[in-house]
Length: 428
Image (cartoon, rainbow, N blue to C red; front, side, top):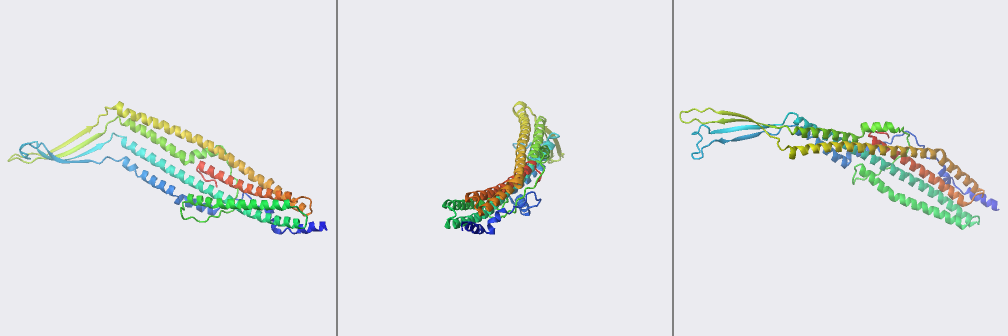
């Protein structure tokens, strides 16, 4: 009779209890995610920080033409050499009504250098804009993968809860006929409660992750639901030396720093050019009135004035020293960015390689082994060869392996997103 009860209780396990043996979608499938692509494109267009940076780039670009333009000419109108007593405009020969124009002409080469300065600065700002766009894209992808991991964890936790509730019903039924202990029931209840707690925690995290994703996409208060599709770990060749070369040629941050280095060279040239004078060219016309029968000719004046750069030590010398210091600073900052890039690339490539190994280990060993162990435990429990604790433990091992597998895929994809940001070229 006891054997009969054991067989009957084993038959109470419904097909739903075996759901946890169904394999997850295989990693490595080269399936594009149109929802992610749409979010990335939307973020690059609508993110407020990107929009502000675009306005800044347009403003800086508009400074190029004025930087190389001449100063406005000065118009001069008046009367000269008027007698103080009579105030007559006809008595004295040198009294005349005058109109003149004065134009400042910088020393040759200064205007071109000023225009080059503004152009290099504009190019640097445009590269910083692209760096910001890439950063926003990276943030969107990371938030998207985090949200996808949370959704997958919710799905797995909900499925595991249902299976554990099936196990709880089995334990209660066996306890009711004296074939199980109260400890089995309490253990099953505890595991169900833990799954409920996990579902509550994940449910609390999801709105925050979705809000962060919508913020990065530039949606602001117009929050829309995002439901990431199944995650895949698409294997990408990551050769550190090649990635370094690609980053040096394409990373906007480095390109912006190179433009700043060029700008500092132009600034030094301009500071040295300030030792040479500028020219004030003046052309004037003086109209003289006739006096009685005396006819007076009008007069034309042309003068050239230059500034004398005599304050070399107190004014121009320090400017040259400042420009030299700024050039050295730009070079040092570029080297610092290179060192930082090399270190971060090494870290992210190592992270991607290790997480990919974890993904493959889950696929080839951990998940199949955990599922086989759970199947064997279930079969053994049906005939009374293992206790209930072993059955629960094997079930939780499968759950933890599935969650670990999903977390490894998300970590791998986030590492690739970081590598993409560091190099400035798309990988995903």
